Length: 246
Ligand code: CA
Image 1 (cartoon, rainbow, N blue to C red):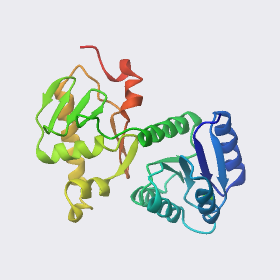
Image 2: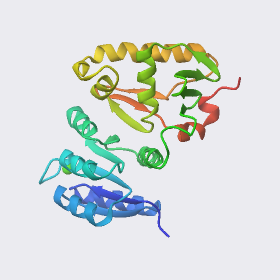
Image 3: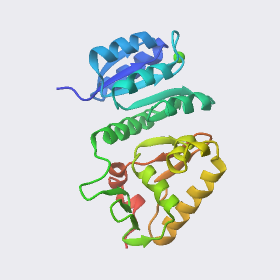
Image 4: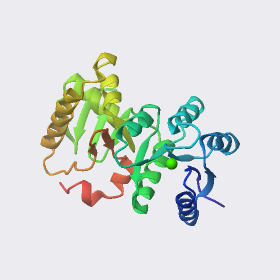
């Protein structure tokens, strides 16, 4: 029996082979592609559970591969990108990628991202009662109420919508433009200072509601890109670090 299937798209052969070998040892079934066209052929043939994608490919832009996959499937896609390529990362995330790793990356970081996006793919967004949870945060989408460690938090409609979009996107990176479009509308896509103010206000309100609870690491800032939202399962596995006893 083998584990989830991964498609690695990377034109640098030593890097691709090292990555493939490492992931095979971790129990994944691995397919490899060295170009965008090969990636699409492999995708058509195998429909991997997750795609690791280098954006700088010899034939087409990696973003084209993302668009192609997104036309057909919600399969998690993690971008592999060079340091400083913020524009490329944003373009990839806007095209539908879930997350990114900056090369060179540590293997434990790679593992954490793979697990988080695979969990995101397998789990429902909200439970049967319409609740979204992240660590001690609980958002009731039916009552439009938010609790932190059982304490009710008073949010404005915008703050509520912002938190709802974030909790619906666990284990992912959200670009600033995407959050602005989702919460404020198309005309606001460039108002990142605006978003920054709201996110900080939201963080303050959530922390103030339950001062004994650490919310650190639940919604992290990704400089120049946007925000990374932790996923509930990984937070739950580390209760002592993220949830203080009450
Ligand atoms: Ca490359």
